[in-house]
Image (cartoon, rainbow, N blue to C red; front, side, top):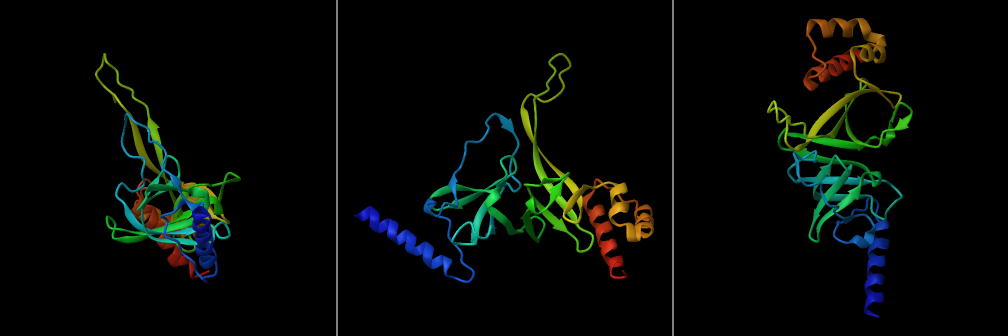
Length: 234
């Protein structure tokens, strides 16, 4: 009888949340079907698999129609780039939210002193396939997509030469894409001129004059900003 009453109360909470205009949920009970236990991490590997090594207070916006609630507010999270999941710090321990259930999340990053928004990249395609990764989008008419990911670098120590790494390492990397009609195009000089064709001559002059380095995010963003400033003309 007691179990039945508890189940009924949980159902009432869910019904009440679904009746709100913009429902939210505090991620402390697994009965919502949103979070699960944290999986075991790889051991004996140097480095971090996280996008953010410190817990950041965030708002998570869930895929609509999957759950009674559509967002989780003010919860401390870390983003695991190896498993593409979000870890939530709750009163019942660390829980995990699958990427497929998330539309986007946002936080204030104290290191950059900016508000950052990460969206589910499955809105886009890469080579005809859905891009199922979290990414950020920068710019208005010219749109730059940044994807952060983890690579496992195997130990390559050479005893005879005494060079290389003795341990496996996680290496955090980023790739940049331009967005055209929801299709991701890998960022190169050639793709910049292709995507920005209406102003290709101006962009070419800007890149040459400012000696744009396409390995530097700040330089890449400057090209996007310049293109956006020109885009109002057409």
